[in-house]
Image (spheres, rainbow, N blue to C red):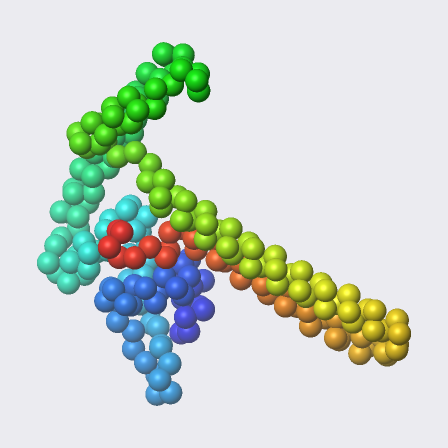
Length: 213
């Protein structure tokens, strides 16, 4: 089967599938004409990968599991331990926020230096606060996708305006006019469909490098 069918069956994008191939989690055969040819076993493997990734299992550990160097029980036990650490980290973060709330701070009375020192101390004890850099990068990518789609839309609308103006000066047959106007309209639709997919990819973290997993 082709990659589009695999996308639909597994529920991930081709960008993810290519990424997993690059990470050697999946080995896909090729047809006589050189195109990738996916089978039911590939779909099964991709669903296994998707399941483990949704449990936040690192790519490297998934690779070791598929290579027979680790067993599923060990992987899941390690993941439970990691989730327990995350839960404890969230609990301490909540306590820190509650402390600030109970102290009835205003923006003017908030001692940011002291708070940051306390956060640094908590981080040394294992607490993990939000990675603002990662969030900012994700938002920047989303804005870039929206901006690109917006610019292309404006350009296509301007082109439609030029066509309508030209038609008012030198009228075309209605069928031909609709044909020419339909092209930029289809481009606009295609751009926004692609932009929607791009936003979903960014929100899903599908572009993260293996080192971040």
